[in-house]
Length: 152
Ligand SMILES: CC(C)(COP(=O)(O)OP(=O)(O)OC[C@H]1O[C@@H](n2cnc3c(N)ncnc32)[C@H](O)[C@@H]1OP(=O)(O)O)[C@@H](O)C(=O)NCCC(=O)NCCS
Image (cartoon, rainbow, N blue to C red):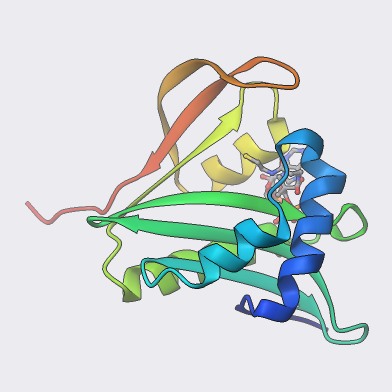
């Protein structure tokens, strides 16, 4: 069974391993995750396989005056296309709203069709391009926002 919960210090090593497998040179280290877990303006969540007690996905958000910057969205290769990222991001945004985040933003490589489709399914809208944002290989980023709907 897959459960969704806040990341714990014991998860940092495995989260960094997953990052390394997926993002290579741009991967976060164990220390990066440990540091982020100590910030009171950030929330990191994971999907965990209760059978193996292994982390299979993670994502985080940092609150900057009501705007939440989402990073570190990844799912282990063996667990993709099962709805885990969608469920995890919905959970992350619910937790983010509980600490006052109203608008969410994130970036994706222009060529990352799975991520772009996921974000659009969740209601994110492209608001611009950040030229050459990514390295290894160099690529533009699409900037997405999901803004709180205001009653008029
Ligand atoms: C992008 C990623 C997080 C998606 O995770 P996932 O758990 O497989 O996604 P889900 O199963 O929750 O899919 C939800 C939606 O995302 C989209 N999606 C997911 N995988 C897709 C694929 N291979 N091709 C096209 N769309 C895809 C679909 O819209 C899907 O909805 P649907 O099932 O109704 O078609 C995963 O592929 C991943 O970890 N990639 C490597 C890391 C990465 O690129 N992270 C994002 C950095 S910006």
